[in-house]
Image (cartoon, rainbow, N blue to C red; front, side, top):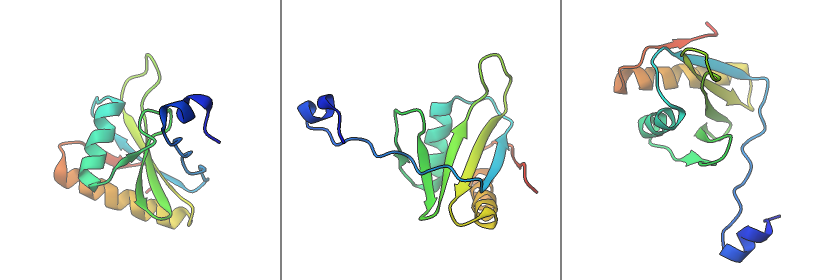
Length: 118
């Protein structure tokens, strides 16, 4: 249900992000990068839109059943940046999608991307 402000301004409400599943594969990026820059770079690499931009949980859809979210270190923690790849289809799909994303990032960026599940 849209809030009163969304109605007044003629906006459609932002749909919630997909429900997180236990099927997650994490990629670690050892480079210092902001969450906004990381979202832009991953979206550009995937030629995908950032969904839920401007919210606490923006994500990029990798397939109908998989998506990626960016986690940055908490205040005072050093890099790395984590890219969590979730799948509603299972752990094997999350890992496969994460490896494909890692390969795409390796070929289009200078990031050092390491899977944390192999």
